[in-house]
Length: 137
Image (cartoon, rainbow, N blue to C red; front, side):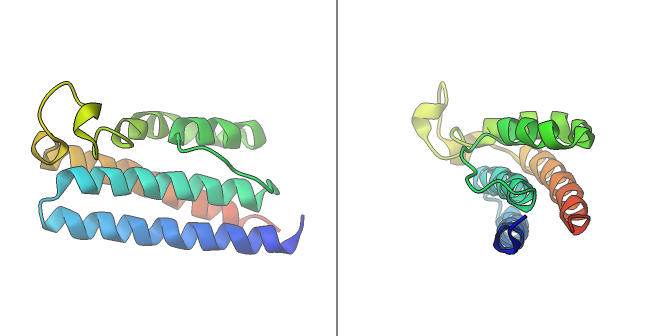
């Protein structure tokens, strides 16, 4: 594997961790929709980091579920985070755009429990991916 791809993986993981910290920060301000979105983003970036670490030169897409499926093709252990990755995708568009919801606006629809669940899932994915990247030689 080209060493620059492993370096790129660590850059993506570092941003994933920062997005996660930002999600925790906005939770304290009761910005639940933004917290959910940032949790989704952190998981997405972590999975992209893994794919770079495993030698993918181009990593595309925003679906956490699809990125996890791509990682599963490389390492069957990714089945352990499949359920978390599938459910985070619902926070990609509806948390930001009123027309992504049947009614209301994102800042009024998402609640603390939504944000806490999104954070729990994203945290598990980030920790899982970080461990996997640390194993890459």
